[in-house]
Amino acid sequence: MYIERYSKTKIMTFFRFLITFLFFTTPFLLLSQFEFKGVVKDKDTGTELEKVLVVVKPLRINKAGYYGGVYTEKDGLFSVKTTYDLPLQLVLTKKGCKTKKVRIKDKKTYFNLTLDCEKETIEQIITERKSDNDNDGIINSEDECPDEYGVKENNGCPSLDSDGDGVLNDVDSCPDEAGDPDNNGCPWEDDDGDGILDKDDNCPNEPGDKANKGCPLKAKSITDIIPEENSKILFQANSSDLDKTAKTSIGILAEALKKYSDLSIIIEGHASSDGSESYNQNLSEKRSNSVKTLLENLGIDEAQIKAVGFGEGNPIDTNNTSEGRTNNRRVVFRLSD
Image (cartoon, rainbow, N blue to C red; front, side):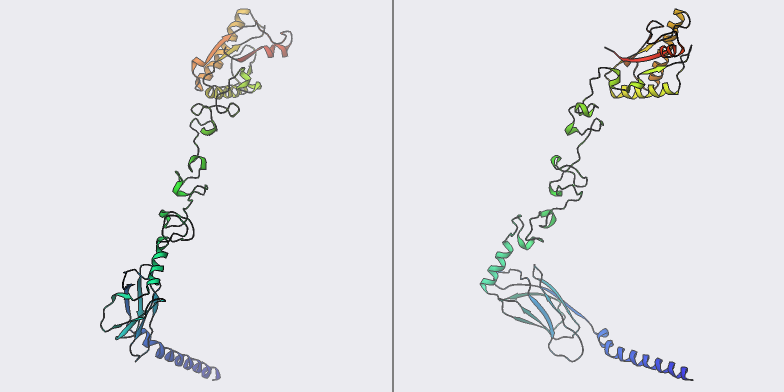
């Protein structure tokens, strides 16, 4: 019973609050709203007046409502609202000008208004508008950043730096791509793709080496373009077949020859003394030609490579031991003269 009585009490309290709230707020919600717009200028010079306080007031107050006040913009424009009914009046005030009251009897909504201002006030306004505090060539009245040097494209504010390269957009030839200030804000090119920027490359149209300022190295020996361990290939006895290690070395040589396309090499084939002299001559030629064929298959121009065989005539080790004969069964790469 107590709980039921308590709940009814809470419900009655809520409804009393709701009725009171609606009683006081409904008149405001039902009020019609007037909006008045216009421009305020000086009576004698026609200069648009900024920061004029424009207030709309009722001539008589016979119900609840509100009236508003605004300041005019740079161009003298204003827009002010009220919920009071006609008749109304606009009251205009500005330091250095006579206060003006304009009676509104009908539903006219736009007004061209003038104020009678002191000469000194107008001269000061004109001077300020023609002033250029930051000397950026944009007068204060048109400058959104009047005390900070800027550019016209950014309404008198400092130019943007969209790509964050330290070069402002108005002087950046590549404003959306980070670059170098010394290249007008654009990235430096690398036309020959050798990893050396054109500005630092003495041979910008020819792939080269950093050690030679972007120009191709003047190789004096084969080991100037490939590692020494890849400058020789060993073979099994009586064989010209290329094993995995041999193919790796030939691949490295192919990449070097593509990079140094002005170079040509000699592929020298050799044999141990096992077998007849004619057999070993033929075998050495097969070995050098097997290397040449693979290089051509890897895209090397035939004009860059020459294969020769020396048979058993140029051993680098003794042929009296198994190890010595293994070392003699070889192909060696040399630069052409």
